[in-house]
Length: 432
Image (cartoon, rainbow, N blue to C red; front, side):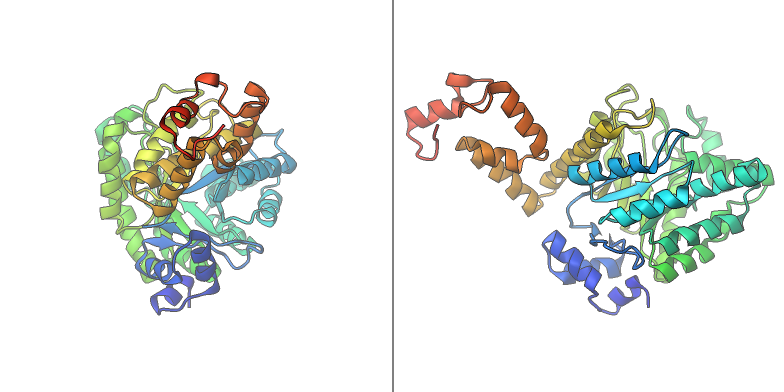
């Protein structure tokens, strides 16, 4: 039986137990969510040292950081440094999106070093290998796509992003809409290029049953990606995007019937007033499958600051139902992130996740913020720093601004509001 089938039969596996402990909820909550398809626990048994987490309805919003070999100067050592930086910053998952070099070696090194779920986009490696072998990615075959997927699954990859729903029907709808940015998905554009060149339907759609067989065999969670995701605000919620969502919903049903865990990966770019409708539409069409959103970005102008842009979008998306946030770094739309930008991206996404969880009334999130409020009221600086989303950065600012010599903050000094209230209203807990 598969992991999903175990849950549907009421079996509480050790992975569910571990995920429940990490989440701070009863194992029965995770098990039932997995059985219903509203929660996923990405956990390939071949990923040694993995600490399972649960993603989905009623749980804390999770964050994923993307790394990977991306140019001729990339090294596995540098990507492992990014991995460690992301882990220290608090990411819940990692995606290896390598597109050059020793991709097998990089993936295996990342899997060995990562105690969190690791995801990939197998098409990326297929594109590179076909280009190297035949001189063009257009010559890749469906068999190669499936072989790469199985190779990665056998290594221990926990979840895989696949553009299975980008069909000719979806493409025609997008063409008829007159998009500003027709295609921005790297994987989606290559799939569509292959389809048009060969005049054949999407091979990932046509071979979906075989994909499900591989996913079930290795306990890989599918993360179906949207090849027609909008690349600018003007294209949000157009016919191509919605048609793909409809197809994704059909593929969700097929995955669940096959005993395979599945979530949906989403946009992208959208105006703030589209967030609620986008989340509602996805939850309805995709039968409550967990939603893994990329940002979303709420303006197309925040170049160099898209981590902030995405944090605003991610917070609101989380509030309206998204359960998994793919980080965005300051380098988005400009280049590939360095180690420092990886850290910034993770922290920004975690701020979004916390804000969304507060809006959803998550008890742990509420208590965390309340603890910080109490520590501020009592001028407990060590406690404030410990509770901060980024304790290291908070401690650095505290030290450099006032060298830690005074109990008030450097901004207000002797006019500290907390100190004045304590002295004049005689609140015992206020102290300097």
